[in-house]
Image 1 (tube, rainbow, N blue to C red):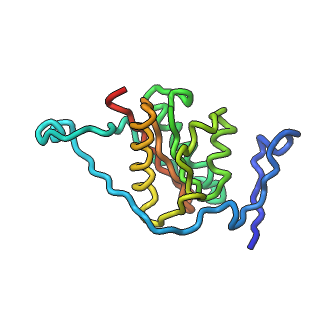
Image 2: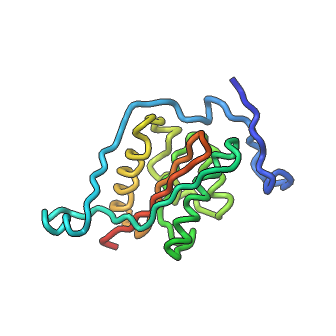
Length: 177
């Protein structure tokens, strides 16, 4: 089954713009099993129980509303809200974990904000890992924290769009960098 997707106007007239305007099963995430366990604790509880810190939540936002057909752009809006709240900029983000329900989502973020490929979905995205309905964002958060620790990134962000024109974004900071 093929569906025609609207081209984004800022790229439609450019000669060198990618001409990807078809969404198919080849560039969409398959449903998959999986999940992630996330344990949140206050700084006080971490000290009291002598727990190891993995990451600290710096900001959280949700973007919603507008045209449901533009849901793929909501992660950008959610990330921008976090940037505005923290005073950080796109270049400050060491790694971006964007659930690619469709491959065009992360590609748009990279094009719109000049993000290098190495900073996006380093361990592969939903196209390679699958879309674990109901468990995706937890799994992405666990994966992002692992990448943050392994690659010694100071700031990372996890985001995912959903079909009702909404996206959450969570900014994390590495307590050891």
